[in-house]
Image 1 (cartoon, helix red, strand yellow):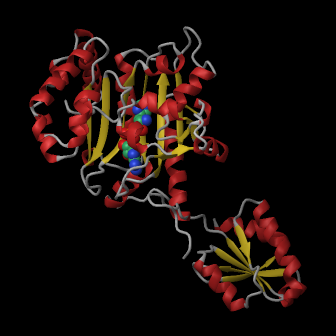
Image 2 (spheres, helix red, strand yellow; image 1 turned 60 degrees about the vertical axis):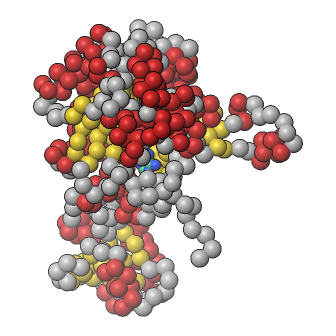
Length: 436
Ligand code: HAM
């Protein structure tokens, strides 16, 4: 086979593509209960949008971006000419930066206006080392709310996320909800310095990446999966002991709302998430079984400065995203099916060429009435047409033969009971509808 899907990508074959559609529909049902409306943004944007919002030293910006260059731009590069910003494009690694950009560009939250509440669904691209639950092209549904300021919005976001997972059939006890507060511009700089000094003291036990992170962005060491780094990080100063009063009060309020809603959570002082734009509340949902190390099925948090960086005007924002492929693995492990299968249609069996025009027209009539219908296009024998109908899980076959048709009839075979009846062509649609 000459061509295969590129490394780290996968085709969504019909059953998976139907499941992805069901997943998006479920997301829309749940998110619209909270007032969210759909938005679609381009699959590629200016690279700078993603690198600046994620943070230049984040893994996403420094290693995982898929750059997009036109042939013209590549030629310029080869000739040593510098590229302009609008020639440096990238496939989106996430939806947040794009949605915030769109909200700013179209002024969706005018001065003093109500929050913009938007949800999206689509492919995201990260050049990671592929493994189970980690792809280079994967699918997310996500939400962003721009303009809400109060702690209650953080809690509502988390509750909506958990409600979405439950609507898919995941049991609450099969998931762990981790929460943390990452502080804000008042308390985070001093905290970051404390972590930097701590890591410097333990530099010898850190991996090469984390040693580099000490200067660039010490909090990123919290994300490192290396065993020795994890041990060091376990002893690092904790966010919770270093929050300013406003951040501490806000985090307490969020926890209070979650308690009141009966949502169980674990405070994880090491939870920093992969993007530098977060401030204040962050959260992640992990599944306990079936996913190995890639067990985060969704996550998000609050971001105060992202809109300011993108548009020059601050606006408080928050959101989360959920990974389709990981949720599917979790549902599989729990034996839950989201897709109810392809709709069962009718197969029109054409006995010989003389009746083909009638068979063709009956097929159209059935489709016009909203009944999925299919028929032979390969001049197959009657026996093989029945075989095709069986394989396609047809609900019924309509057999169009010259003898029956001469008296205005066709034969309808119920494929479940194998009962057959003669039906006048004028009554076919009604008779088939009665089978459903
Ligand atoms: P994230 O945690 O990077 O957050 O991604 C959200 C979810 O996408 C993850 O929990 C995981 O299920 C899935 N995911 C991430 N990377 C991969 C991958 N390589 N392969 C398969 N699935 C993956 C964000 O993307 C933020 N934009 C969330 C957010 C929205 N924060 C605020 N608003």
